[in-house]
Image (tube, rainbow, N blue to C red):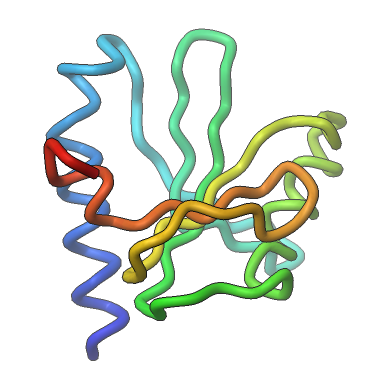
Length: 110
């Protein structure tokens, strides 16, 4: 249950902040016919910013697999993606995938 609550809190926070920091951006999620799931996808003009949400304090390259797969599927293997997590650090997880703590979205000192 913790994971689902964390995911809902993150999505609500992003949805509340988008009109302020990215006017005109839309928030969506993605599930393809072949089972690829992305927790969140921000559509902002021509940009598509995919992200995963993990309730864990640390994330691994395995957690980045759906993001890398999506970037390759859309023909943008050099694109950027993010994993929002419950930890405290910002760090690279895989090529072009960065882990960002949820608290960075919710606090002025994040």
